[in-house]
Length: 98
Image (cartoon, rainbow, N blue to C red):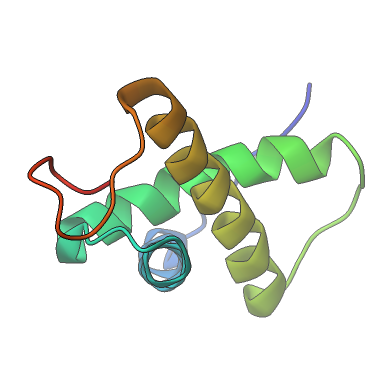
C-alpha cells in the first residue's frame, strides 16, 4: 500500500484549506488561471498525487506546512502532465488555461 488517508472530524476542512493553498500556489507558479474551484480541485488532486509520490520515498506524517508542500508538488506535476496531454497553454492564448 502506497498511501493511507485518514479523515478525522475537521479533517475535511483541513484538506480543503490545504487544497486551496496548494492549488493557488501551483497556479501562481505555473501560470494557470483556474479560479477558486479549479484551484481547490487542483490542490486536492495534487495532494493525492504528491502523497503517493512522496509516500513512496519516505514514511511518516507531515504537519500542515509539509502537507501544503506535498500537495503543491503534486499540483505542479498535475499541471505539467495536463499541459503535455492538452498542449502548452500560455496566458493570452485562445485556449483555456490549465
